[in-house]
Amino acid sequence: MSYSVKELKSPHVLSQFRFHPLKQLIAAEWESRRKTRERGYIELKNIEQILACYEEIKALLFIGFALDFPDDKRCPEMMETYIRQCCIAYGFMKDIPTRNIWLDLIECFLLLWEEDLLKMDEDGNLI
Image 1: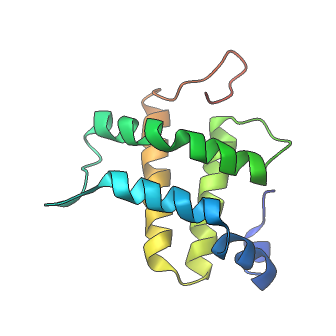
Image 2 (image 1 turned 60 degrees about the vertical axis):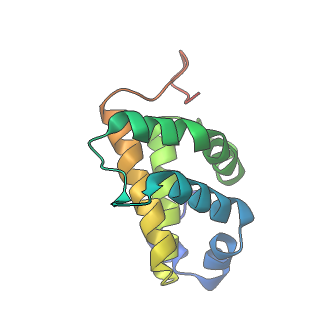
């Protein structure tokens, strides 16, 4: 379900994000793949590594998307909405580390989309 910014501020809606184990797992998996030992995060310029990270967690993203948007097409526009919504919700909860992970994920997703590296079927659904 797509929420407005006002709805995302609601404690009831925020608790759905805070205590959702899949959203926590997606954030943890993304962070573990993006973080490097010596220099912080993988440079955004290294698109091959970003694509590899995305490919490793996209199944989790697709499951999370399907749970939140069961009636919507899994197109890049709606996936962007899903990821942004998670980012905004964690920001409202003042969970800045998790918000930053989702922010990094949206930046990487948009980069892959701009570079036409997201796999889609003939109907425009992400695969």
